[in-house]
Length: 66
Image (tube, rainbow, N blue to C red; front, side, top):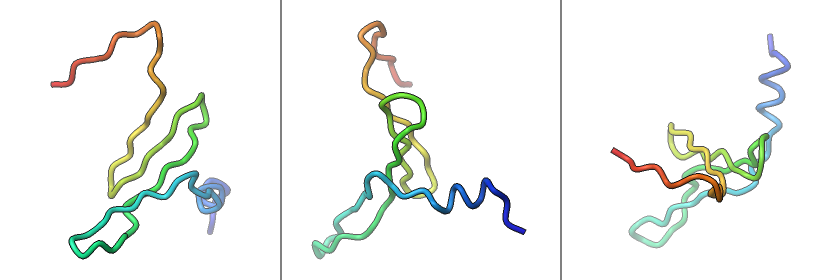
């Protein structure tokens, strides 16, 4: 049985498609980016990882990564 959530996910069309170029110069699809539902950001899917990107805020300082 298919749920409404599965149908909604299946119908999403990416805003951008992410490609990588192999050693021979051929492009292969590596992931996709979808407009984020909250704000001017993107959900980026590459391989089995999900990233979320937003424009920098004028009020916040950049965080240091470990």
